[in-house]
Image (cartoon, rainbow, N blue to C red; front, top):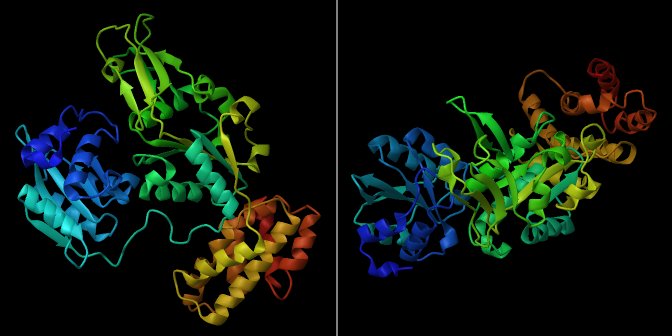
Length: 489
């Protein structure tokens, strides 16, 4: 690759954009440009990410929802036109969130690409932004970080056993497919968000060379192989054409695929050729059209870190071609999933063949000590401030409830109970005179009533009643709650 320092600004951009298919949805198609600008900026290439934006209205959403961009020192926006004030306003709003340090916009004048705007967030000078501005001959726009800073990952990280976190980390490092298994409310989906955010901040610590945004999808019982992998559909010309499913879409965009609540679908039935593919073999998953001479669509693996599609134009081509269309998942590509082990009794289970293709990481309900730690954090960050006595009372009551659940009922994560402090703090702000046990009973019913109703005629509920209905917990409010459960059966 040409030494960046030897290229003039216009040459650097032309070389960086050479061969880029702007119509491709791939998230890593700008890797050469990212490398060149990283060299110019004096930062690691993993700390530079480019994203293509078509207009100002979409800019904020695209930037905020990209892990690749959010964890960089330099975010590059590629656009046909900066749209003057609208684009600049959107860029300043994004920088004000404090997610990316510096944003550089590359737009097109005629056939030539040029740097049209550079901005950075903070209260002091940015040597990187100033250096880029001098190199490309543009002014620098300094933006103060807003007080309304928003995080992609919640600011109350999960309290998870260290060995479970290590299992997840090493599984993601060493396997292409990983499933998080555990009862509802244990934070499996949030844990996926945390791990992808952690990788985005330092992909090299995971043996990866680039950052990949996750694509979250939630399967359901209506899914077939067409939704997951792809299959025949009728196009706008009333012809039968192959339509890529979520796996192929994720590979084409070079995004990780996350199957949230995976057991809502019968994965044994719909995975089809993915069983062979996940074992490392290439498979044919369809043909471009109904014509048996049309391009076979092959799912394969690449030795490169990023994913790519070979022959993508043949998927919608007017002419029949025997040349294959090959979707190649890069060595950094991953499929992650969450699996509700409790609801598996009523939905779908993994078969042994499919199960062997995934690394399984157990995410169980935390013990009482870990729950207490998480609860104190949530109480301290309630939407409305709580006094010390109120905070202690809420902590003690919810601790009793959680212990009773853990001892007498089927496993259930703490998510619903951890959301109760916000409800209680909101209720205490009103002049209704409601007391803490009343508010907790209401929030408890709203969040977990449907689950509790399943046990309403179960003998174990009497043990729960003795603990949760004690004067140290809900007291007389327990009877009110039991009456309301009849409506939720």
